[in-house]
Image: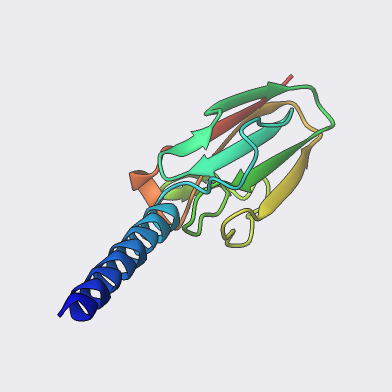
Length: 130
C-alpha cells in the first residue's frame, strides 16, 4: 500500500511538472519572443502584435532602416496604408519570428508603411527622411 501511494505521488509530481512546462511553452509561443535582446539598434524598427516600434522614425537621407519581427507570428512591411499600397519601397517578404528586412532611404520625404497581413488591425508606421 505504501509503495502504491509513493508511486501515485511520483506520477502526480511528474504530471504537474509536465503541465507547468507545457504552460510555459504555450506562453512563450503566444507572446513576443523573449530570446531577442531588449535594446533596439539605431534605425531599427521592431514589429510586434501591437504595431511598429517606434511608430515614427526620423533619419537622414542615405540611411538604411532595419525592421525586425519581434513577434511569434508572421508580419510584413509594405509601403502605404491599408487599402492604399504605394510601392515607394519594399515590400518585404513575409517575416517570421526574428527575421529582418532592410531598406535604404535615399530620397527625402515621408514614407508610411503597414503590415498587409494584419491590415488595419495593426498599427502602421512612418519613416521621415530629412
